[in-house]
Length: 477
Ligand SMILES: *[C@@H]1O[C@H](CO)[C@@H](O)[C@H](O)[C@H]1NC(C)=O
Ligand SMILES: *[C@@H]1O[C@H](CO)[C@@H](O)[C@H](O)[C@H]1NC(C)=O
Ligand SMILES: *[C@@H]1O[C@H](CO)[C@@H](O)[C@H](O)[C@H]1NC(C)=O
Ligand SMILES: *[C@@H]1O[C@H](CO)[C@@H](O)[C@H](O)[C@H]1NC(C)=O
Ligand SMILES: *[C@@H]1O[C@H](CO)[C@@H](O)[C@H](O)[C@H]1NC(C)=O
Ligand SMILES: *[C@@H]1O[C@H](CO)[C@@H](O)[C@H](O)[C@H]1NC(C)=O
Ligand SMILES: *[C@@H]1O[C@H](CO)[C@@H](O)[C@H](O)[C@H]1NC(C)=O
Ligand SMILES: *[C@@H]1O[C@H](CO)[C@@H](O)[C@H](O)[C@H]1NC(C)=O
Image 1 (tube, rainbow, N blue to C red):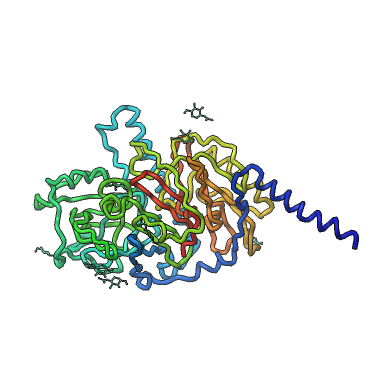
Image 2: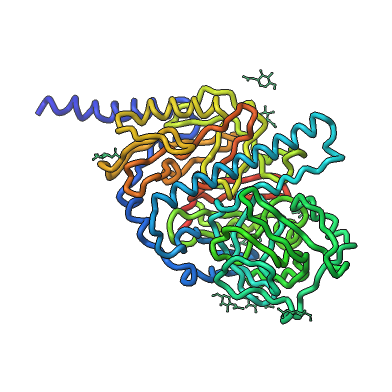
């Protein structure tokens, strides 16, 4: 009996010292490890619907905000014959998107160094691989439901239009401007036509009728859309956007997954965000789901419609005129399992992008991350590297894992905590090859990118009016 007392006294002391050691240097005390259930991950691959069953996405209006349900397109692909191949192809596309982004950024930078930035407009938009865009929403344009891919990395919204010279297969009927009362084409003499190059990298030109403004957007994977620039009545669930400027695409090519086109949420004047700034004050946010249930894209700012479970903390968007089309943040540090990474966070910022999948870090930061991760996540059977991912494990024998949590630190002491679901990428659906879902850029002067794999299960608020970006934890489904 007498012996139990010391143990009982000791236990709280041991807990306290553990508590102190993990929380010692931090003002706020966070969890440093999270549990990932692998059995749940393995199971998810099988639950797939066909695109037709996925359309349209629902939408609603609430407290001045327009809430568009946003679904991950992969879950609407019907039966996938070979999951391994699908998972691997996505990485290949992702790498080509990042490569072309880096090349275009370097071109812009070098034109700045040569002092030619005012005379030469390098088309930053063209060159971005679209196969990685994965989230879809439905809006009503000219009275028709249109399901579009969401892209914060481009600006012009376009849909496929009749009469079509060349169109890819889409689920919804093709848009016919002839039967819309509200459709208006835009002339090539207009200033709107002249601002096109800021949004697409290609200037607007006069069409064969010598009147209509023709646009062209091309992407690094060979995808493109070409057609007439026009205005149409956009109905965002009760919020009317008359005279919305969009591309009526007559010639379109690419893997757009059966959708009707692209919704551009970038920063230039023709993006949906700029065109609706009177209604929504330049504020939008999204919560990317990690399974087949819908998340949301919310236009407008009343934060009471969010379902976040932690307060939103905002960091400044850096404005670099050379990178003005991207959403750029000031990354000041990273922690893994509560340990600060010993690396220089000195570079010119990190892009946050809805269309890049895997997060890219500059080589020195990635090396530090990998070393610390392997130190904390030790003892698991290694697996071969795959494509861009070099920290891989064979986890077939495991049901549940404790994984050290990664946090990004931004200017203003803002932290973004990566949800446990964003830590690993499954190269093989049976978990025999699972890799850390972050990777290295080729060069120290490349620009880092926060990919959508790590953005899932959080509310990410873009306030373009106040040039700030907010993070909060939210379960998106
Ligand atoms: C668009 O989809 C919504 C949601 O399913 C539906 O209620 C509405 O009737 C559709 N509108 C049109 C014009 O088809
Ligand atoms: C729309 O109308 C124009 C001219 O009136 C005609 O040339 C064109 O073929 C029509 N397109 C469709 C899809 O009906
Ligand atoms: C806009 O959409 C909402 C719901 O989606 C619908 O109730 C409303 O009638 C539409 N407005 C117009 C002008 O089409
Ligand atoms: C930014 O917000 C302020 C007030 O919230 C508003 O007056 C201003 O028009 C907004 N600017 C833009 C570009 O939306
Ligand atoms: C946001 O919604 C709440 C109701 O939940 C309302 O009291 C508040 O005034 C709204 N704020 C703005 C800025 O519209
Ligand atoms: C950070 O950048 C500055 C200026 O570019 C440079 O002088 C300094 O050496 C860099 N620091 C580190 C630790 O790389
Ligand atoms: C993965 O590990 C399991 C045992 O846990 C083993 O049976 C299997 O062969 C391994 N797979 C690969 C590809 O190494
Ligand atoms: C990023 O934040 C750090 C720390 O607040 C600051 O010293 C640095 O100048 C900022 N970098 C940029 C590009 O604004």
